[in-house]
Image 1 (tube, rainbow, N blue to C red):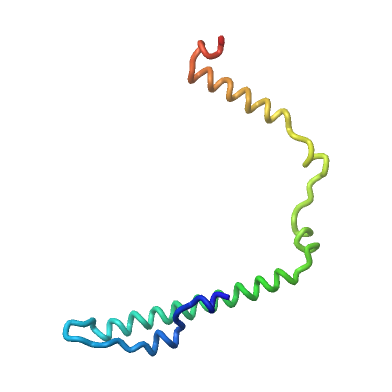
Image 2 (tube, helix red, strand yellow):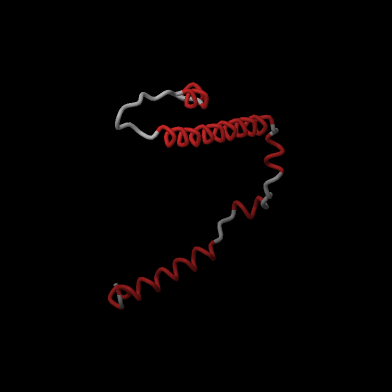
Length: 108
């Protein structure tokens, strides 16, 4: 689980107490920044929870419903390659090679 891998949660960030020194950071700036981090943590946790629920919902959905939503192609159309398209591509490639490499290439 992702929660097992996290080092901090919102409460730990909120309760973190930093030592102060003469040349330390401005405590208000640090607190404001930590507040933003806590808000982001909460948003991420909500998104993770939403995605977990969606994942569980999708796992429960029967496979038939998933395939039903996809368009079905004619079996012969899906299995038969389109030779005309291949011929057109090869012809264009040949013309391009002639244009790039010149007449020498076409004669060989």
